[in-house]
Amino acid sequence: MKAKKRITYWATVTALAVSLLIVLVPFYIVVSNSFKPYSEIAKYIFALPKEFTFRNYSEAWRRLNFANSLKNTAVIAVFSNVGGVLFASMCGYWITRHPNKLTKMVYFVLIAFMSIPFQALMIPFAKITKGLNLTNSLWGLSICFWALTVPISTFITAGAVKSVPIEIEESALIDGCSHFGTYWIIVFPLIKASIFTFATINTLWFWNDYLMTQLMLSKKALRTIQISMQALFNEAFFAWDVALAALTLAILPLFIFFVIAQKQVLAGASAGAVKG
Amino acid sequence: MPMSLKTQKKMRSISNYILFMGPAVLLFVVIGLIPFFYEIWYSFTNWDGIHADYKFVGLKNYLDVLTSDTKYWTSMWFTVKFAVCVVVLSNFIGFWWAYGLSKNIPFRNVMRAGFYLPRIVGGVILGFLWRFIITELFPLIGKLTGIGWFSQAWFQTESSSFWAMVIVMTWSMAGYMMIIYVAGLTSISSDYIEAATIDGAKSGHVLRYIILPLLMPAFTQCLFLSMVNSLKVYDLNISLTNGNPFRLSEAVTMNVYQTAFSSNKMGYGSAKALILVLVIACVSLIQVAITTRKEVEL
Image (cartoon, rainbow over all chains, first blue to last red; front, side, top):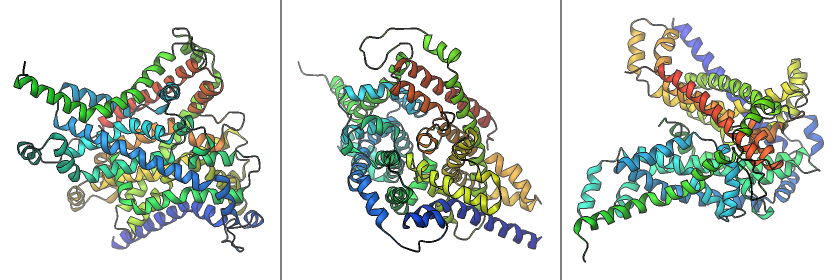
């Protein structure tokens, strides 16, 4: 019995290790080949580079206009979080603390909207954002992200506030603190972890968004990493050596982000999925 | 006339509502809700996206899609098949990873992060990365192992494009499913499992009669998320296959995008998009209803 148990245990460990290896192979292939000259890629795809070169990177950096794309993407990712952290979190707090017909209705509409895909509003969205002068502006795009992350951010804050003991807030209000002050001074620090969680999920979305971003930004100077990649892969003189370096450059910032904020990312992955 | 205390209090309460909920609700309504209702309205018109005047045409767009748009139904069938395959594969793999990791495995946190890593590669980058793997590495694997399937002419037949998309989506989705199953598994109290083991249940029975029923809420979530995400697929579609060959690997969103923004048929495109939304809503409601019924109360 014990021997059999040990066999199943090591079989599980081996199976997991092998599947992890398979999952990670694409990363290895792309990164290792991005340092090779073109002739070497075609010959030994599995091997580590013999002739280490950074030429692909300098070329990819230039063709992607990477410094600029990275800056645009970062501006969007940071600024788009402001709305969620400021407005949606306040909204979520108020909904939980003042349950009545109005707040319940707002909450219901927000939750229902979470299951509506962007495709369901895409066509008028393009027209309305143009009418509001939000297109071709990083700030305009961020404001749209504020709006479209309201449901998820409100939902997560509303849930988090439930676990904050209401007595602390009551005593603050009796002592003459305003609702606004009570929220920011007392409640917000207590639910910081949840705020981080939704900010992390949202940041991944902002960073990786393609469909909505390309509807709104058409100017070359405003390209995000995703848009620059799409442009690079559609160029006539496309070659894999430069493209692999470009892919590595494009994945690197998120990889660093994942390593640093791993806990929040993984917490967010299961929190975003919680049923309403 | 000075305001009574009651009105004053009411005024303050209203201003608090505006302060706390106003900005979020206003943004959401203008940029989220109004476009959604407009899309419903457009789907009953013949708007071309350029001219200001358009006519109400009733159900004509919907009838046209239903009766004569074979291209749309080809892409719908493609999308549904794609979603079913991705749901089955990614949940099967994600569940086994989570179940394996629930044992006392060395480096389990590193492994968990590693399995999740593909998920951070998003948007068009996911498809471009795999274009290289599939066109350059797969033929080599085919040559080395002798499995002809790997050496097929990728992206030149409908089925090769289909399976390419399924593989990549599964790669991206399985780790995500795993995280939710891990959360579900850790919430199961070890008391039940210990009690059953002491009563002589084998690990297969523990899995079948204790873990799986208690994990139903996680299954509900995972099936829903993987289903909706696959039915909505767009970025992966344009970056990996771009519809090749001959627009045969075109998922619905790509078809809608073409209709609305390349052929400038905004009204007709809206109807197509809303049919997709209806399909997503129906499929997910049925799925959630079925799996929720299987959840056990404790």
